[in-house]
Image 1 (spheres, one colour):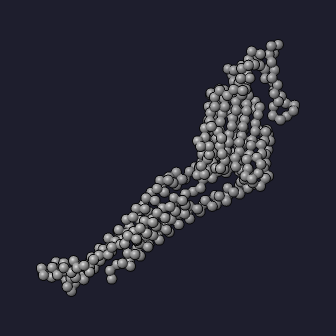
Image 2: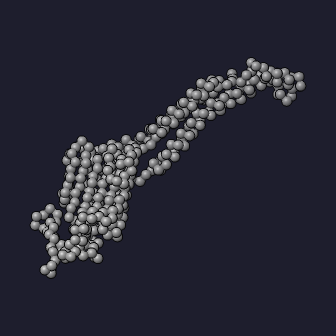
Length: 352
C-alpha cells in the first residue's frame, strides 16, 4: 500500500477481535465520506392487505438480502437493527444480526409491527471507494399505527386493509437498487394472502344485493296488489255468470247484465294502502343496511413473534371460518321473512 493511502478500520458485527480494513486513497476520501452521508436515490414501495409473517420468514428475508448483496460485490454489513412494537408492552430493539437470528420473545403480548434496517458498505466495481446503501422494511399488523413517512396518503392504514408492508432502498447505484427492490417486492408479496372470489368482488356483490332488495321492497307490494285484483276480478266475473254458464254462450241481455254487475261500486277491487307500501320500503332498506354492515370478511394481518400472536391468529381464522356463512344465513332469513310477510298478506286478501 502506498504511503499516501489511508486505512479506515471498522469493527465487524459485535466481536471485539474482528475488523475489516478499507483502503482509501487520500484523493478519494472526500468521495467516500459523501457516499456515507449522501443518499442520491431512494426507492419506496408499499402494499396494503392481509399478510402473515413469522420470525423464520423474517430471518429468511435477512439471509436472502445479505447473500444477494455479498454475491454481487464486496460488501460489509456495518449496521443492523430490528425493532419490535407490541400491544401494552415496551418496544424491543435488537442491534445485531446474530441477536436477531437467535431472538425469542417470551412476553405475553401481541405484536403490532416489526421494523428491519440494514446498512451496508458496498464496493462497486467502477467506484474507488465503498458507498453506503441502506434498506428499510416494515411490517404493520395494527391498522391504528400512525405512519409518518412523507409518501403515505393521510398517514394511516385503513381498518379494512388489514395491514401494510413498506420498504425503502436508499442507494447510490441504480442497478443495485433496482435489483434489491425486486427481491424485496417478491419476498414481501409472498407473505400476503391470496384474495378469495368474494373478497375481490365484495363491493359489486353488495351493491347488486342492495339494489335487488330495495327494488323488491318498492315494487313487490304493487305486484301483490295486481295479483289480488286479478283474482278478485276473476271471482266477480264468475259469480256474475248465471249458473256458471260460459260468457260466450250468453245472449245479449245476459251479457249486459254481467257487465252491469261488474261495474257496480260494491265490486271495487282491492287496493294496498300507502302505509303498507312504506313499511315494505323501510324493511327493504333495513335488510340492505344489514348487508352493507354485516356481509364481508375482516381483513387482518399477523406478525407471529410471540405465543399469543399464534393464538390470536388461530382464533381469528376460526371466527372468520363461520362468519360469512352466518351473515349470509341471516340475510337470507331476513329476505325470506320479508317475502313471507308479503305472501301472507296476499293469501289473507284473496277473495273467498
